[in-house]
Image (tube, rainbow, N blue to C red; front, side):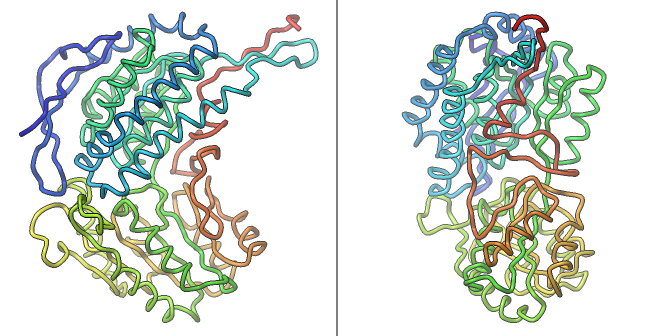
Length: 475
């Protein structure tokens, strides 16, 4: 039985799409449809953008208290429907329920809560000499979001945009759209004025392209692949739009020889790579080990992989669910086969489903050792539970290998604290986690190089949605 989520939310109402084509939403754990959505067109995007434009003058002048009230109501709605949201995320992209209830749901709540704290203290005006510097809403924002952390990636855009006084047109991933639909239902009940937030489902070539190019949209924020990011930027270029992008990654995890607990650092790196079935742009997918300790690291990594149980997302013992789709399953399998072909040492996993699993897009947790940085698996973003272990001879070599990538989203360093910090400063990435430090909703998130531009999360993410006006003589 499938549930229909076939309407769009435009100008404060649930409306029928201009063209009623539908798409089945597949549960990757059983390869069966559990929902349907309508696929929008440029006509739907235009209606949403016009509604957002009409709502902008009023919402941009709303008070901070009005914005805080709406955001507080969204938080309450997410908490009230938390179990339903977690189940939807698990069904649409395969996250184990434990992960879905904690990290997936929790990250969405975390971004809305973080933005409330920023609104409490943010100074929208300041005097500089004889000039008043005013921070104002950037305008109508178009958001194009991915399937791997669906609520997180929507929330870290929507929360700051609403707080800044912007209006919104959202296109979530058509692969994982149900969580966005539920969030929209919550937003519809939050007291937000009509037209401030609008939802149009669809694919990138049709709806994503229309959002990127629409003349009434002032800013586009995109999260996804580097390939698709290029297309968004090109489509937005004619309108001289502001474009922020959070794209791919191939993050290095440097284990220094002076780390206090080598076994813990290695096993933690393995599980960090395998988290969310490897479907995180900032996953530590390249583990760098001192050459002299490679054999030791292999033994620890193999033991950790053996504990990474793959299976039914509803089973409490499951650590890894399926990857999101047949397309991803085939891509990841092909890259594993490429690693074997290029001579990397396969120490865990391999192509094909785990033993005993006949259905669903499940990938064996896979580790390659003695990888060199010119191999395909060390250069391309696999986006699955596949770890490459590389050796290095000294600190300079480790930094060189870490930075020898077209990406620069994240990095990881474990070692004596001051030593680890010294290495972290040399990594060309927007985020570096030292000695196992986790995410921080108040810290900016984003990348260097082909991992994107601009920042999300925290104060810097909030300020992406503001314009700066200098009012000379107003002081």
